[in-house]
Amino acid sequence: MSRDRWIPLDHAAAPGEGLLEAGACFPADSGWLDGHFPQKPIVPGVALLALVLETACRLLGREGPPAGGFRLKKIKFKQLVLPDQNLRARLVRLDAESPLEFSFDIFRETTSVCSGIIILEQFSEARGQAG
Amino acid sequence: MKKTPRIEDLIPHRSGMKLIDRIIRLEDNLTLAAAVVSERWPLFRDNRVSSLIALELAAQTAGAMKIWRRGETKNQDGLGFLAGIKSARFFQADVAKGVELLIETACPKILEHHEGQYGVVSGRVRSSQGLLAEISLQIISLARLPGS
Image (tube, rainbow over all chains, first blue to last red; front, side, top):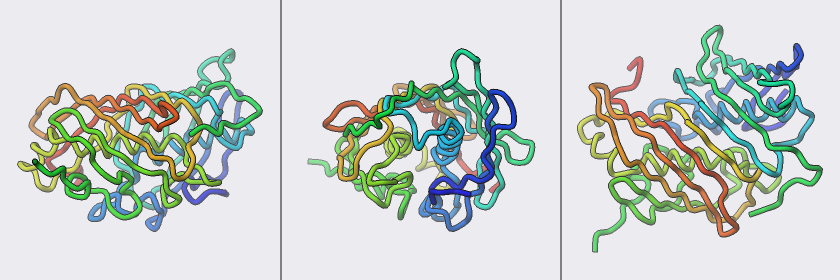
């Protein structure tokens, strides 16, 4: 289960070589929906990407992203995500020689609602404390 | 001298999800805003916030641009949304509570279509320590919400 109220991940797993999966659901009382938006609650895109980043880090055995940061490419938000919808993040390693680069989709049932590429920089043992 | 509007008058975000504190500069296709990292922010953990939050800061700052609001006067029920991210680079993992972040967004061109507007917004988020993130956002502003 989730260890962070902002990232409601559950049953994260690596079901195959280079494949990472996790389920998530943003409840109606999630902080992400507190004012986003008052008349029409919609899960923010940044919340979906936080799921992807957390899934990658957790299944790589890391507490958080590398101190050197990370990159996103070709992100598409295809459909609105509403409260209490069950989601599944699926990350696929792009290249066996690039273990920190993944393409991903976030599915609602069988429909991809968000997709793209995430690239983590190399991890070092000391976490960044800049800023 | 013309007064800079309040952020609340420019974007629909409220309560915990209104992250921008103030608008410093507001032009047709350039906006500069400021926000101080707070424990009430999303992704705040262990006295720091994930640098991913720079994405939401850039999106809210982009939403404040005059160029979008001009369109909304025609479509009072419309909202702006992130359609995509062409690319984004986050130069560090996180940033500490209390740090002031400056968010600059620019959108040189807006395309009009029958359902609203579309534009590519470049954003930079930085602190006094340096650049936190560079982001290229794709924003759409719709006359009405899908399904509404």
